[in-house]
Amino acid sequence: MRYKLFGRSGLRVSEVALGTMTFGPDWGWGADKETSQAIFDLYANAGGNFIDTANRYTDGASEKYVGEFIASDREHFVVATKYTLKMRQGDPNFSGNHRKNMMQSVHASLKRLNTDYLDLLWVHAWDFTTPVEEVLRGLDDLVRQGKVLYVGISDTPAWVVAQANAIADLRGWSRFVGLQIRYSLADRSAERDLLPMARAMDVAVTPWSVLGAGVLTGKYLADPQASGRAARWGRDERDLAIAAEIRAVAADLGCTPPQVAIAWVLAQQSPHSAPIIPILGATRPSQLEDNLGALAIHLTAEHLARLDKVSAIGLGFPHEFLTSESILDIVFGGAFGQIDNHRRAP
Image (cartoon, rainbow, N blue to C red; front, side):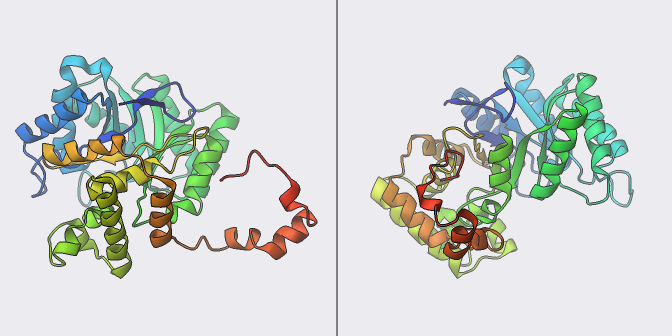
């Protein structure tokens, strides 16, 4: 296990995070406490220190479990939780990005986690209702009070994150150092704007659903009627084609399809930009053990090209417009190919 600097900060986190949405049977499919402890111990013993949870996960059971598991060495772990999602049905102030929900959510999370502070607090999802200044000032107040050390944002458009960090820098407030997004070979839409924004602003990226809700494991190739999250969310022929190519690459390398899918996500970071830190979740220790094996997998240029081809997406406007030959010609006066631009993304 190696460690990464978390965006524009000095915080050191392991190269993969442990997702704990699976901790607790309260939603009908999570791991019980004993199994969750075994998963946590396996991750910690492998050198992992970055724990991802949320106030909403398994109705608070996830945070309670995490609080117990970290208690013997709290300062060692980087504990991240989230606020925004509902904790009381029908009450408009028990959800959303606003200050009242922020404060009550954080105080409740601190109690469930049995800790005095959070290493990282995520805005879980943008509500398109609360003014960005209210969110930023509330988060900065929590940082100044010592209840939160760093702040991040999840499931939010790139323009909102860019706007927020510009305001935070201008006013001397705490900026977002992390961005949590859905990203995998099955869903590369973040490559249009979210990932370029994160690279430009030195924001660390923690992708969730790196196995495409299970599609990329290949389980639906063997049994199209298999149960799981993808069965509920839907899957299409493109997903199955990607899963088949992943399985073929795995056969070449002598590893498992999940390891290939995770290794591809890890390979999307460049040496001089903010890191991409996949979130790994599991309901059994054996699943996590297999996933951690991705850290030892090296995808060749040929493998990456094959995976890129089968999963490629159109970037759309303005990206494809601005990189077309005719536009490059009139923007650069025919000299585009003669300019060595060290800032251009590969």
